Length: 300
Image 1 (cartoon, one colour):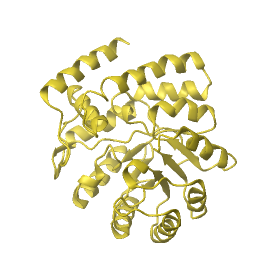
Image 2 (image 1 turned 120 degrees about the vertical axis):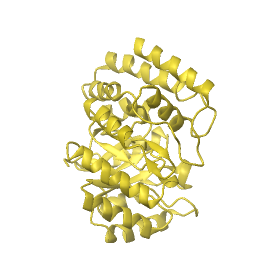
Image 3 (image 1 turned 90 degrees about the horizontal axis):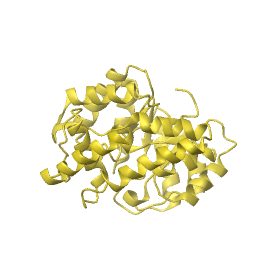
């Protein structure tokens, strides 16, 4: 894995037949769709991957299957966020043995913790795992917004970068400024619309959910941003905004983005749209709307 890690790294959805069974044919289709679309890496068992809803058995089966399908063509990152440090270490070490390139760790997501506690958590975790790791800032799900100082301490402990899903542009710019002299530390946005701004100001890419459906769109947007091609960026970003206003907004469910992506991939005959409880697949009327929006997207 070349450092800094950069480009478009989809947070891969987990194709499921039911809450305890992976849709393996759909997974194969999806991985091939993403690699053929030119993505630069894959992030599995993240938020869009419904990781907290999956058993350890299913998580490990997914890691094993993805690493086998990818076969080192592009880097594979595995989310190991868990409520217990033992659970995180278990998935991290399993991922390392199966050929993953790095893991991604967010703060444990039940008890509120402070910045000092997070530094100690990263300190303990980093001493127990063999695989490189990135930090995941997801305050909407974890009750803590990782500070610049906490990220600096994580870097000192070996972190290779951060996925910032705070939705806070000022914080993203602050991260880029703070680590601009660290040539091997990646600043990757988890907010798709921030991709051009992040890259053109010195960031390294995006973990973009929409790339599950349209990998080439996001790869082109990344390349246009790297090349500072403002006209192309403007036109491509309009398509991303269209996704926000349509497929991502059909449902009023808090997890509408994940559910919309799964529904769209099902309509595209890539994989099943089953969602693990407590989530549930979109209803027939919502599916019809997404089908209409996919047709509109093709014409853009």
